[in-house]
Image (cartoon, rainbow, N blue to C red; front, side, top):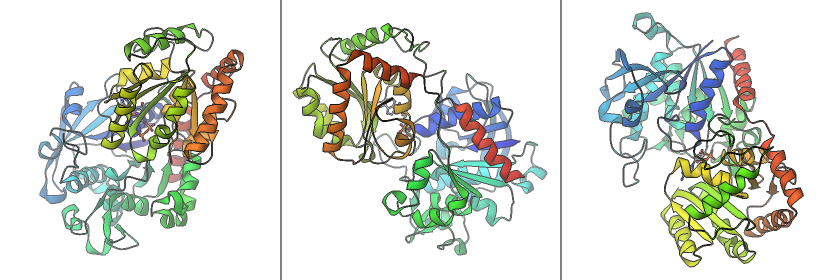
Length: 476
Ligand code: ADP
């Protein structure tokens, strides 16, 4: 079975969040069970710089805005997953991130950029294209991810193509919303601008297009798949998602267990495992030194790694920070995002030297060292489609404290592998922290909990099998 996995980011080439982790790992797991899965990525500078032996395949002409792009063939570094790159320099080769410029503003032509990308994915999956193109490979399934690829199922269906499509929602909060005038930019017919189509409260939504036109919908945990059918977390899409309930499933993300393995992690000053936990103590001391925290074995160290966004419930952490410090705890935060949160954590750090560290930035190595060196991990997200850091925490013997939502609820077992609270309020979070601190004072009970988490299996193979079953159903 051939799958084209269209995504706007994939580790290790380009990453802004969890989508890149999934896109970097799931194709590898699908190939390991015998599926011919290939990636399609935009030709950002980091992508072009990160691959060797790039071969031009063909020119794509029928793209929105009269754009022309070159399809390049390469392979993902490290694992060799076949990779197609959409090279359109005026759209993708620019400074800043994949979606925003260096100042943090959305690129003004994002509608066109990701319409072009979606159309390219649709073309590669269409029978008409494969009749004439030099690329003989044609997927049985086009697997789209998030709003950046949401128009692809629309282009395919509106062209009368029957290739099966899957749309995965990694985070329903990002909907690719553009003014109605962009319907012309993206080259969709006026009749598609309807409730039964791409229209969303008077605007055009790329995500809605995918949710409406794709054959099957998935999201990244069973609980989130239920939550998004309800008004509270449906973000305005709940009606459509409830109506398409039979086509919507939640498949839990795995983690890249080669990359996130405390017994072989090259980012760590010292390795450890559930049988030999001593190395974790060294990781903690080294982390304290590196972050200018007072070195101490016994102090409970709370780690936080997150995009600094409203979703992540960081305001709840700020509300209980004094309580944590009062109880002798330390806090190590790594994150970047909303300025107000960056300032709030910087201030907290300035007020409590030696007790709070706030590294504002993006640092992959440090994220591994915080996972390894912390005792507890705070993840009070208001909603969380799957969440990866709680999984990394479990693997690294760092006991997670999480809000019972989405993938957090599906992966952390209260009182066994972590602590779960049910209301996204400072009070509920604080009660969970108190329970955790109480257990922390009992070294044996704490180690039991660490080991229980470390033994949980969150490898990709199980999830890959679930995707395979979904694909099988679609292609008969
Ligand atoms: P989301 O996709 O909503 O940001 P996830 O928990 O699903 O949240 O995935 C976040 C990923 O990004 C994880 O791999 C996490 O370690 C990483 N990450 C987030 N912020 C940072 C940062 N400042 N530095 C390094 N890695 C980060």
